[in-house]
Image 1 (cartoon, one colour):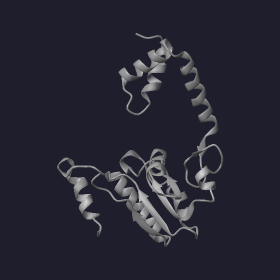
Image 2 (cartoon, one colour):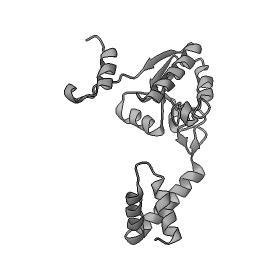
Image 3 (tube, one colour):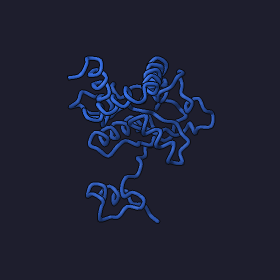
Image 4 (spheres, one colour):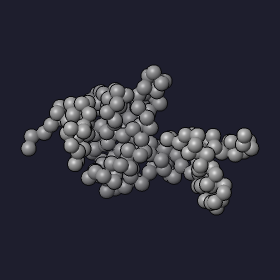
Length: 197
């Protein structure tokens, strides 16, 4: 129905998370019909990012140098490390939490059924980092999915084997949330993680 290059553009846009056939089609038409300069800028930015960005050798966040700005900073608390599943999780912690330590980005979570094992999420590199003398605590900030919990357990075992204290972020009722709207699993986590006032 479409010229081959238009179909290729639509297919490429569908690779983005949450973008289906109709959304990809609308994006392609918008870029081609109304905003060709934005399309060129997008293509150039994507090409430049692919050419220059790589993973930080320490935390595995995207960086344009061997070490990212967080790992290079002398202002960070080098005794604590937060382990997150994705770069987006790192950004969320940076923007929303009062945290000034180091990070380790897994770029996924353990999922043996999908062929994602320790190597694929960088756990050998994490084990090397845990062996460093300066780390005293690892904060595990993986999701509460089955895979996230399995990943948290594995990371916890690595940290304990290295003699590093392990904590897990609290999970439960969101600020401003009403109990009647909270699902049973979240409520169960909240009760298990309750604290003394």
